[in-house]
Every structure is written in structure tokens, then in C-alpha cells.
Image 1 (tube, one colour):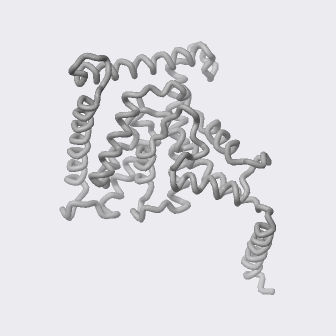
Image 2: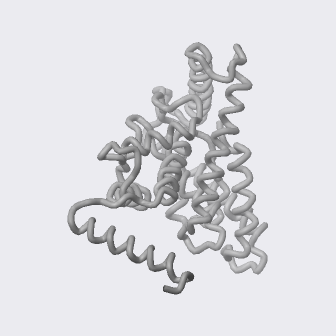
Image 3: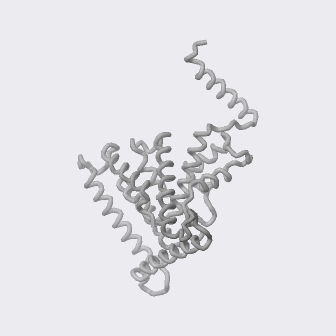
Length: 286
């Protein structure tokens, strides 16, 4: 046999064997790299949902009018509704393990093809994904903006390299944000947050959220009932939407070099790469 053809022949034989096992009701193991990447993407989704800031907001440069409206609604929910179950410290390894445990239905410590297929379906559809933690409001549009930043060729599908870059960047972001928390709250300087330090961080986050909420109520709660009714919320939503539209026009004015009212993949690439840098450096996090 031609030695150059041997690896291909082995791959074909492995694929045929895997198919035969699958038809017989036995699931083959997924490629470790493939499974790890899908787990990392789901972990990135969870990490994005734990934040309450304007993660990758300038991706609105390519958002349609309808998309802007749904983004505003999601961002308002994040601003108004406290996520009391969100974690204090961003721990990407813990998020990975959390995803693995939810999809590893046979409890063998890895994802086989069938288990990986369920995870990939959840990532694609984003409809009640199994990896969603109870009490955590998933930020679908925040993660869309992150994906947009890494879709460098603008084909709306992440290649393996683009997806790898996304996961690596979100993990680096998590580490950066975690380091900030340690620098601020690790009073014992032991490299971890004990229960008292975590409680201090959690309390400060809650206080900051309450202050922002009170600012919104002061400006928009015209009847003084301590909440935002439909008309008051509609006014807040419209002002946020106008701000997004204005920012979109600013970005087009800056990056739309041929002035056709849209960003081509070549025109948007510098913006996407700038957003990647901001993600890694931890910008846009509260």
C-alpha cells in the first residue's frame, strides 16, 4: 500500500466502523478536540451570561433594525432584573466542567458522538439549552455579538479556527476579570476568595446594580410606584434603541469606506479585530 494513503485509509476504516456501531445502537466517542471546542463554546456562553455589562456592544454595526430591537429588550432585562444566582468569580474551568457534566449522560467523563450532537444542537438553536443554569438569564444577543467579532470572513459561520479563537479569548477574558476581583477583594492575599471575600464582592455587585436601577427609576418612573410600567419601560426602550442606532451610524461613518451603507467583510475586519482585543482585555464588564 502507498504509505501516503495509509492515514486516509485508516480514517475511512474508522469512520465506517463508527457508522456500523452507531447503526447498532453504540455511540462512538467524539473527537477530543471537537468535543472540547463545543464545550468551550458553551462555557463561553455561560460566562457571557454571567456578565451584566455591554459585552462587545459595537457589533451593532451590522445589526438589522429588528435585531437592534431584540438586543435592547435583552439588555434592559439584564439592567432591570437582578441575577442573584450568578457567580462572583469568573471560572472558565468550572464552566467547562458544568457543561460536560450536563451532556455526559453515560457519565464516562467524555462526550460521545450522540452527546456531542445534542450539545451542538443546543448551541445552534439556543432554545432551552441543557447547559443553562437555573436562575441564569441567558444573554443570547450578547453572545451573538461575541460570535460576530470572531467571524472574520463575515460568512456568518464560525470556522474551527474562528471558534477556537473565540473560546481562547473568552477564557483569557475570564482570567483577566478573575484577576481583577482577586486584586480588589483578596484581602488575605492567598490567591483565592474565601466566603467572606466572596460575600463582599457579591454585596458590592448587588449595591452597584441597585444604584443603577434607582437611577433608571428616578429618570423613568414618572408615577413613582417603584417600578417601570409598560409606558415607562417603552420610553426607556426607545431611548436605548435610538442610542444604538446612533452608535451604528457612527461605526458606519468610520468603517464604511465605500459609503454604500453597509460593512463588507473587508471593511468590518478592523472592527471585529478591535472587539476581539477588547474581549480579551476585559472591556465592557461591570
